[in-house]
Image (cartoon, rainbow, N blue to C red):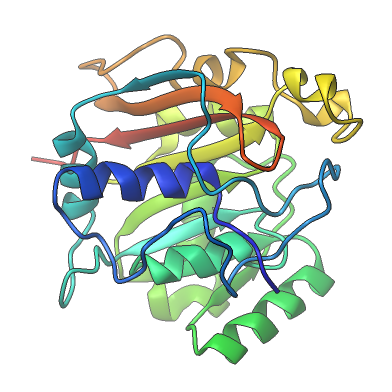
Length: 260
């Protein structure tokens, strides 16, 4: 297995590094490592994207906001941010393994038994403590997924930890994305990297039904509200552009203020 982390994870690391705050022991660069899964270019369901953040429209808030959001998510020993990181529809676990490298306790949510088995094998090979949960996300929301993690017998051992991060990488479920504003736990972050319709200019796949319209990711996740007092949701990063691998993706990072 070889590949690169999703752009949203790379951007989170870059923002933290820019503020001189190490959020984990891994240095995410554009060099391939042995922790991801390389999917074929333009596959209907990509498992990896470019290591560098997408070029193009790029709207970051103060880097301290990103670092603070990670720090508030439940720090543990050392520099690792700690807390649960839920990888939605994470396939064979590439994103979850990257989350582990950043110091989180990864929980892979996936419907495919084959993918879950591959993820568990990959985690065992790398000595990563990966928790898996078999869930069909078709009709789920962010709130219902978080609730499932707390009540699933297979995840009880980790449920006591706070949810620090929820990631959605290369999986388009508009219902799920539209539920972020209402369901993201206090003190948590949401990261997403998903291909857009512009990708068809250079790639035949993913097909249109798996792609976002330009600007749609931000609209779904924050509904046009940036740092709204009533939601406590802050947009840390919002970008669309071509990755080094030649896919056009929308990437967003948002956080919810912790409870006072």
